Length: 366
Ligand SMILES: Cc1cc2nc3c(=O)[nH]c(=O)nc-3n(C[C@H](O)[C@H](O)[C@H](O)COP(=O)(O)O)c2cc1C
Image (tube, rainbow, N blue to C red):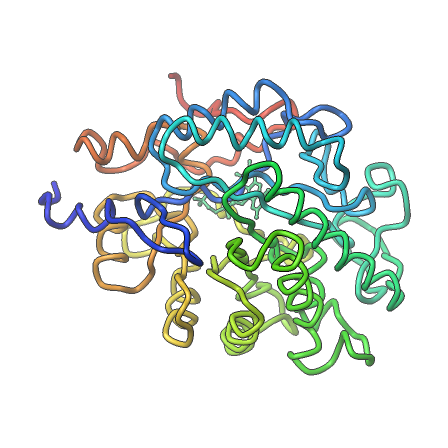
């Protein structure tokens, strides 16, 4: 049992790009398969976000929202590519704001990690590197297509601000398009979008600058960054640190360190419960990045014990604690921790919540 003084650090406010977040807990982006077929926000999603906010999550990050139909990754995914989705998006933001939570929209383009059936075209990527996990060989994007995609992200960012979101997270992880640009394995280009690291983060840096124009310079933009692809020839920890520095210079306000991609056969959701000392499997990457930047850095990856959370933040190793699967099992987790009722989440990381029929925990009886 932790002393109140050890726990209290998790319940101090934090500033992200000028925005005050009431505590150190982040609901990591979680695609819930609950939107309409076209990507319209559904009443089930509104209810889910209200429950998360009621449970006192400091910062709720939405499931990945696609910025263009060619970047749609999965069924019943939130759409952010057209103004007709504004009312639904606004209802999500409003649901989260019933309580003191802050809510960010996660913006994404699937890159090569989709299927023609979903995205309506041959999947796009920085280079035509086949993905053995899906059998997809993507089409290499032209320079014009890259510039248009940057504009799509910026336009979606403006839409998020108009819908009432408090900020944005750019999905630069898990093998999706911006992670594909970052990775030397999937980005073999020789033009200004490939080669040296500065070129491989150029699209993301341009998107950050574009969003600050469409949504306003004070609109917080954070990124979820692949600090490792878990693949030989992929992005290295050293490159991730340098990428974070470059993105901060472009205006980035915070960073969540993640890893993995479909082709690696190991994504971001490692199964099973590990001992306390192995919780936070991407935290070592976050710590290295934190030592090199001024913006807040978020730790992630199988964090389950309150003592680990308090230690990571208390020792200044990360600024915030991010979790996804535990909030499926226990949306009231943060409140339970604050009230001293929960020392460790019940989530067993079985991954059954990743359910195309709709996000829910089936591992344990309620
Ligand atoms: C059902 C489900 C959906 C997810 N959807 C997303 C997503 O939309 N965007 C994203 O960046 N990560 C997504 N993830 C990964 C999580 O955000 C998180 O990085 C990962 O599960 C590790 O955190 P955890 O151990 O606390 O679950 C998803 C994970 C799950 C379980």
